[in-house]
Amino acid sequence: MSMIIYFLLLPLIVTFIVLFLRPKAATYLAAFSFIIPFFYILHRLLAGISEEFHIMYFSAPVGEIYMFSDAVSNAFGLAICAVSAMAAFFSLPYMQSRLEEMKLDMDREYRKYAFLYCLFATSMLWLVYSGNLVFVYTFSWRLLLSPHSSLSSYMVMIRGDGPVFYFLYGC
Image (cartoon, rainbow, N blue to C red):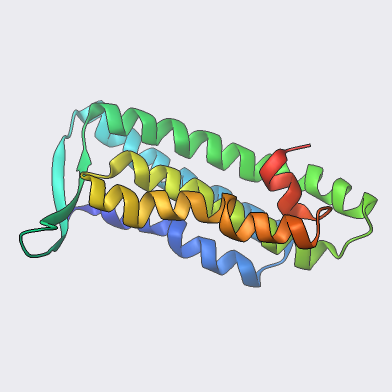
């Protein structure tokens, strides 16, 4: 199996770890989980490595689920990793001030925000490397829509002043 799959799994694993960390540790871990793949993707981009790696095989109607890495997907993956790492790192002071202003529990509410942010950024990264529509829909697009539509909309209706509101609308 290609090494890039392990570097793409790192942000997904960190997504579930940030739920148990304090805000500062969650911020640094989330940022570094995108910085590490950034350098590997940069290496692949500069070396001109292009490959297709298979994840699962199914019968005839579905076919195979694979990821594809070429210059275009590596360029987009590089941009996503850079922006995601910087946004994760610089969102801590902003969210601290907003959560204190709203008189919410910083630890608990920031964990929700960090989880949703990491899930969203990871699904963007996986969307870029998706090789076919089955993989796009089942793994990337559903994860991309999940924080924005089902979970987040439900949380905004229940509690419109929490970090989910700022994750969705950014104001």
